[in-house]
Length: 350
Ligand SMILES: NC(=O)c1ccc[n+]([C@@H]2O[C@H](COP(=O)([O-])OP(=O)(O)OC[C@H]3O[C@@H](n4cnc5c(N)ncnc54)[C@H](O)[C@@H]3O)[C@@H](O)[C@H]2O)c1
Ligand SMILES: O=C(O)C[C@H](O)C(=O)O
Image (tube, rainbow, N blue to C red; front, side):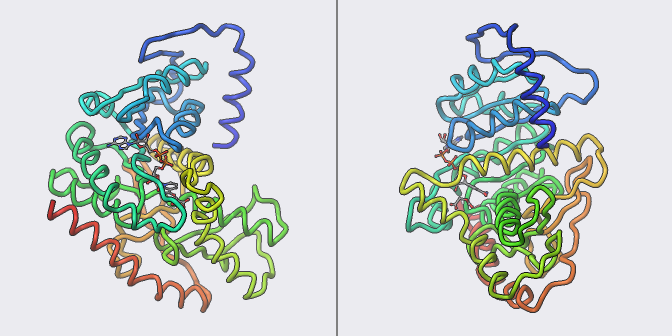
């Protein structure tokens, strides 16, 4: 992903002298026969995450059609990114009446639609607004692109993924292999924080993050981190806490102006790229994601997942855990279960 973005930017700069201005909502750049056609839709594309995510997906050579949907503001975002001379055709759709067109034929749908936290709030405090948004967007997905891979970013992810599953079940379109809670930002953070303490090259670091995506439900497995480093128990605990509180760190620093957007767009682009690679048959594509799972007794759980032509090819096990990780895993289960149940209840009562 990183290499392909750099290549896209380099080739875009090399070709920049021939750009022309366009004012229409859909703009075609150029086609490529070497990789399959793939449509990616971003719902909430005019928002803090949506805009940089639109940029990063426009730089992805695996995307042939980029569909940007929001309740308002998307024609401008679409016109803007459409001038970037990369492969994809870009279309901007504003307003619910255009949602069907935005979704039709999508292979991957990324959902960063919904309100972000302010200081003092938990992700669960977003439930009342975002649950309804996710429910209506998933109802449309079931109708217009029931086979798409859905990348859920909207919080609280621990509940919005079960909501999406229930909506798809009711519509008769649920396929557990195609629904993903995006927890990549937790992995991105764990890698960055670990590299800083272990004094290793961050580009080489791998750290699985399991559980869910809120506070104590986020469990980075530093005992499995590579390259190996001899970190003390205190340092591991501090790294775990910082990863769990990474979102809050950004919310507080932004002081009322929202939550992580740029790092989330990066993480979302990494995960969508992995989904596209899996769909295209690239072997051994593995990312952590919050999916339907039987790795623990909880019905949804984040762990390493192998991606393939149908979405989830295999939910991988947790591997050996340290005593600290075993204890932390047990203590996160009640909160995660209650968030899952809250989502399921919401989807079935309203
Ligand atoms: N999974 C993660 O790791 C992670 C990380 C960061 C943020 N988030 C979550 O992502 C969500 C979006 O964050 P943001 O900073 O981009 O917020 P934002 O307010 O900047 O943008 C949200 C966008 O969603 C749009 N929207 C609202 N209702 C919609 C609907 N029904 N259909 C389509 N679009 C709609 C808004 O118009 C807005 O443009 C929040 O819930 C936030 O908590 C998740
Ligand atoms: O913390 C938040 O509210 C946003 C997001 O879930 C994050 O982890 O940054």
